[in-house]
Image (tube, rainbow, N blue to C red):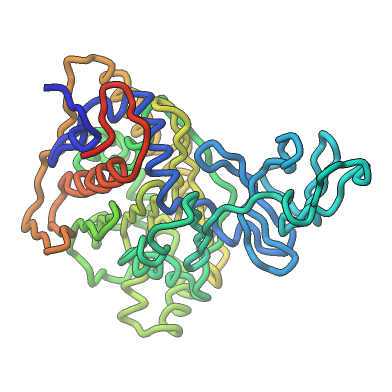
Length: 430
């Protein structure tokens, strides 16, 4: 029987193909998920000084992330309230004001309207009160990571992140001065649904098959690249586990299961000594060898050992971009940061070792799901020592599809909540 509600599209261990292929479902996601919850949009290091800005989009709305003259980071609509043109036209830069190229209306970096040509001829016009650049209803940051919500109501950012704050802390604490600095992103796209990248990051099941060339044919190259590190202290974390900890978020902790991968970046003993001076030796070793995939639902993916994060950008039901940001560790030696940036490029760029395989797989999944005989997509792989608490949060000790199932719990919760006009063949309520 065909699903008749959003809740029925996402079952406990499978989801209907329409979740990936139906443009109406995609539009509802943009309203109910991206238009309602907290969305990661930028890192404060991208706009370090007053006047620094970055332009982007949020649910196809053009926005400006800007540090005002007062030092505060704001997220403003990149839309002139006069006739709707953009007022900022480059990806990054620094400015004392924003000026619309169409009619010359000018705005401060705080969004105030400060200049209107022929202002004296306007009727029923109060520029100070009504015509500044609109600000997003809620903007908060944690450890430099800026999130925004298009909804004026809902969970606070702290409530939304939950235990994720601890993993964000670890990501930043690996920097001797406690800060990470995002570099310009590596941008790529694929002809598939946005959730395919989210699922893939939670899915170690595919790696031995899809990435066989990197793991087997390239084993000698990888050994030369990663295992020649002059400084590789013995790991004190050898376990692997997955955890879902609320709001669709999850982690995969690889312990030391991936050996020397990406450890070439940390060969300089001065880096470890800087961590040991800040913490103690045990904690310094833990941070040095941290190897965690962190997923903050719905659009932020973090890779601790390679020290980068990825932002998922849905464009259409079958079109997605991913922006991967290599990060520097504040206070770390230059050679450490240079190696981290190079490792991310090797990992996720168009000529890289791994992510290019994933992009091809996403294309093939999207193409394969056009066959209507494939009605349900399965997530039935369980994990060893599965345990789930009274809040529905879980942990298991082997690769599984549990985090993906956990993501779809949140998907179903958000998609079924509130009021929205029905889409063809799907009812709004649960």
